[in-house]
Image (cartoon, rainbow, N blue to C red):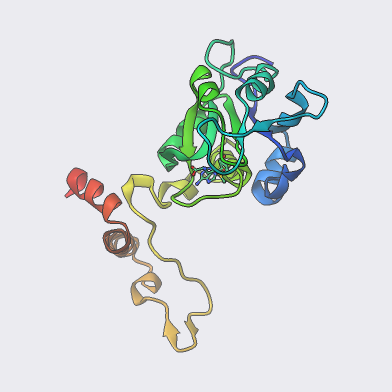
Length: 242
Ligand code: SAM
């Protein structure tokens, strides 16, 4: 297989490889995985440990609570992953999922989905020795301002969001065009049958059959929702578009 037609590849380094594929084995992502549109391999970090107790962590220098995952173990685990890092034939970014990372955005997801794939490192305990993060020039990504007990749900979220953008996974490219974050806005609200539910009517304009009016209403709704809920997105959108 050449680099051009190679499938998108996700490698996850974790202490819990049995958590994968998890939800990624179901629905759209699961069907695409079964159809060979992308691939997933979960590596057990513990198998890279050198001592007979398979130790992956140690106490933090400087003291403090919890344990830290060892740089030498993570380095050995990464060394066995084809394409990890930037100095290889088909480089895939090595991404450490961490609350200290840059917030994950749909724009970064789209870039990652357009590349050859990702190598995702899932932390546990207090996290990972900083030196291996630096030595591998890892990208650090957070999925939100909260603390998970491990990086696995974060890795799954990133893969889920990227896989649905891969060619052939979702039928129509139009599905993406109006989604939240496309064009810098949250999406407009949706309605379906029944037309009246618990005395609540579907907005009249959506029944009009007038595409221009529907589009204008949806855009106004998207702007209103974004302004109300996400001043950060709204300010960026307003500076660019208004
Ligand atoms: N002591 C760390 C801190 O305060 O930043 C939190 C460590 S957390 C208990 C263990 C692991 O969960 C982290 O190493 C990371 O891999 C993952 N994790 C936790 N929250 C995350 C988030 N918001 N985004 C991405 N990964 C997260």
